[in-house]
Length: 203
Image (cartoon, rainbow, N blue to C red; front, top):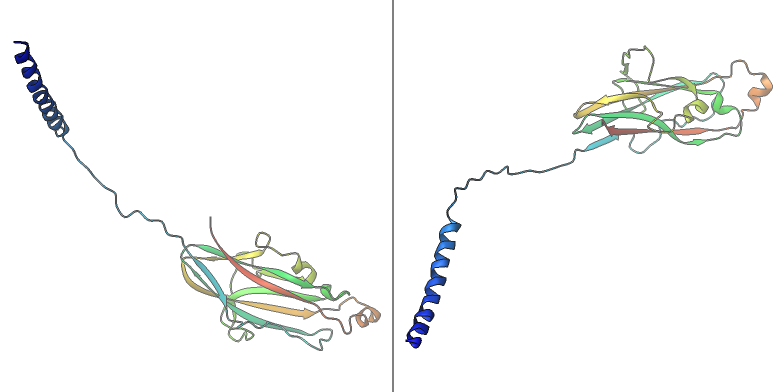
């Protein structure tokens, strides 16, 4: 009788395991399910590109300048942006003459349309709300103080896309109010400055 009970117990164990497995199997599929998906998420940066038509040459190479001389030259900028941006101009690499020449060469910058590098034929200045050019006539000394994007004067608002603008830079050698001795001190002197244009996307 005892042996019979042991056999029955041994047989009952696999049956219990199989029954428990069946319950787990049935419980695993005893639920309703549903799914939805938001696919194709992606992040891509915008781009901005600023070029000019100077072909790597300077706008001004004035030699043998005399009191009262003046001149002008143009440069065309092309802005290619996928996001709204702003273009500003400021100065870098100012050269000192060791004299008063920086205060006697005066520069004015105007924005507009028409004209190309070093040729302002057909240039038409834009109408600004203030009636003032991008940079009113200032001395090279004053212009040298405009030396970063943050303190640059003016600003060209560029919508997304490809757009162009021409800038006319006018200069004159002003010796008004100087004595002859002071004017003579400017002989054989030279000075210079670079104007850099920069575009940044709007925040």
